[in-house]
Each structure stands twice: as structure tokens, then as C-alpha cells.
Length: 219
Image 1 (cartoon, rainbow, N blue to C red):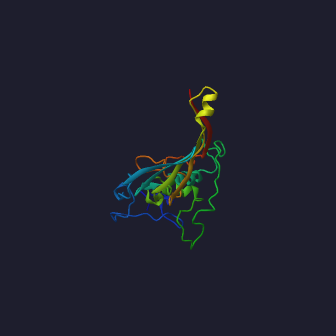
Image 2: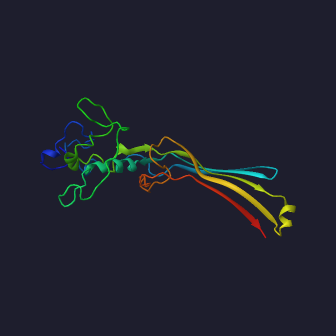
Image 3: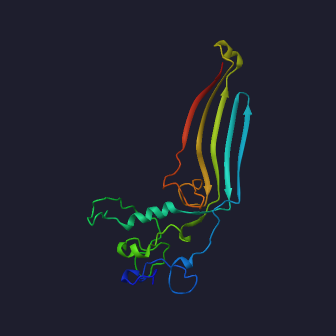
């Protein structure tokens, strides 16, 4: 049975998550909690390199993190939306509308005989009691190491003679881009935006890529 209740909804059935009864007492509660993963990275660092050719300059900045676990709570949030797809509030369906998100890309249990990663998301009433998408479980735990190219800047410095003609000491123009690419096994939106407990804190939104163009002048 799940937890300590006696309701029929508290009995396990096909499509439920398989949980670990650590102490073997046939009751799933706080006594079964285990330490797993590593929320704090063992290795972090950054790299910055600038190369120049004549008046051109190219700078590349990258960062990396290794040996860290992340709980993909962004995915958990996505599936938890299905706990109440009808938007019930004060006993009235549709009073608080919610979006029913697609889950066709996930290994979801749908019928007897399925061997899947995630419990049946469509058994709404039953899931209120078994809570298969709780945040604090190893179902969401993933390897959080990454190598990210954070920024690339290409610049050009005009000749001093040209700058002095218009009363300036130096003119530099540049174009840059941030959030270039990330190499990681993590399936969530952003392996950088993680809480101290190792939980994805992105809210499901990836970091946007930006582009900048500008001038630097010295008077």
C-alpha cells in the first residue's frame, strides 16, 4: 500500500511507479528516504581565449561543470500539470483552466504489458494519492555535467589616424553573441540554472541566445 491510508486509491495498480521500500516494512513513508547523487559539482571552471590578426580580435569564453547530479524538476512540473487537467476549483470543472501538455515524446505507461519510465499520467484521481511525480525522487535524477560556450565576440579596431581625424583616440566596433551552445547529457532546459539542492530552477524555460552590435570610443 502507498503511505498509510486505507482508501482503494491508495492501493497500487498497473501503471504506478515502482518505489523502493528501503526498510522492508511494506509501508512507503519518510523512513524509506535515501541519499542519492551529488548536488554540488566536484569540478567547475572556465576558459577564455583571445586571438588577434591585424585589427581584428576574436574572444571565446566557455565554462564547465563536472560530476554533479540534477533533479529534472522542469520535467516533473510538466507532468504535474496533468494532475488536474480539468481545472477544478471549488468543485467546479473549468473554473481554473489549465493547458493539457503533450507527452507523446515520453516513455509513459498506457496499457497492461507496457514497460515504461513514467507512471500513467492519465489516472488523475489515483495519482492524487500515489503522487508519482513528486519532486524528491531519483526518477528525475540525471547527470548534470556540461561544457558551455557562453560568449563569442568579434571586434575590429579602426586605425588611430582615422579616429584622430574626428577628434577621438580610439574606435572599436564589435559583434557578439551569448549562450552559443551547451554540450551535456542533461535533458532539461538548462544545466546551469540549478538550486543548491540540485533541482532544476529554470521553470521549464531555456536561456535565450542574444546578439549584440556596438561601438567603443575613447575621447
